[in-house]
Length: 160
Ligand code: MG
Image (cartoon, rainbow, N blue to C red; front, side):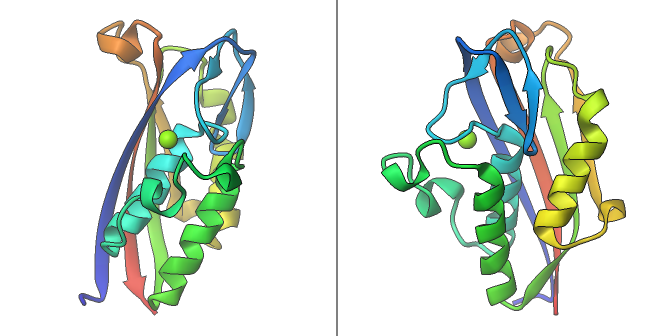
């Protein structure tokens, strides 16, 4: 296996009735909620998939099936920490991650520092190695019509 590995992940969830969304472990007040088995944290789900993908370990749905009551209402930060254990178990550490949230609303910018600090803590790396950013979809497509939230993530792993 190569000493440097790259991974990418994508996730999308629908809005439903509710009063908040959770992104990178940050609870953000919103006039809708997220339909999901877990807490519906698309950003952390995309990041988990990036980390798993980097080591060809499958995807988040295989590791944490939404048919398993264990993961009902799960805190996605717990999932991320479990994925990190798999990464460490394969002899790699996380060098860098970059997460992009696609959302018309809520606004992400005010929460970016808190999001980065959660990911840095959970992955045991410096905040300087964690990027979180966001974009709207300019009103285009399902995200643009405010039907849900989407996130993409990439990561770089280096052999220890
Ligand atoms: Mg998901």
